[in-house]
Amino acid sequence: MKKHYDQIKNVLDDIKYGQDIAIDTFFEKLKLTEDQYLKAIRYSLKHPTLFLKRSPFEIRINNYNLHLLKAWRANMDLQFVLDPYACVALTHLLLKILEIEGMNVDLRSLDLSSLYLYLR
Image 1 (cartoon, rainbow, N blue to C red):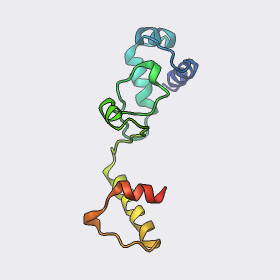
Image 2 (image 1 turned 30 degrees about the vertical axis):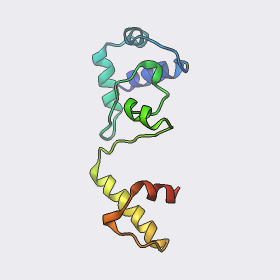
Image 3 (image 1 turned 45 degrees about the vertical axis):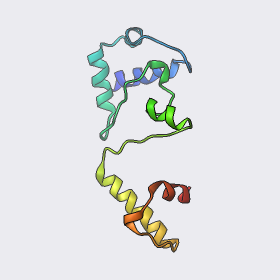
Image 4 (image 1 turned 60 degrees about the vertical axis):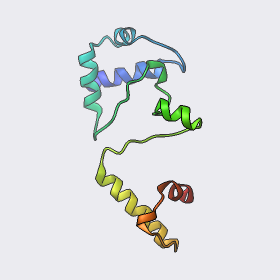
């Protein structure tokens, strides 16, 4: 599996920015079946991961939602919360930082976007 995974990484690294490649051609370059490809990707995962259906030429583009992108018309870096405990831990850490900074935070009116901008 590791050999297949390394092979996938090498082929992806060889794809130039904006180069379009059909999925069948991609599998031919890998000399793998779709099933072997999926097994190699699963082998590499250490925690729950969300994969968005994308075109191969979009491999160097951050996750995005087309509807949000059109509405927002600005750069975005979306990260999906797949581990609720990690989300709670991060929120707790951010609140501790605010407490150390001397800000009094009412959890009922907490605006995470303002919190993010403050901590940037």
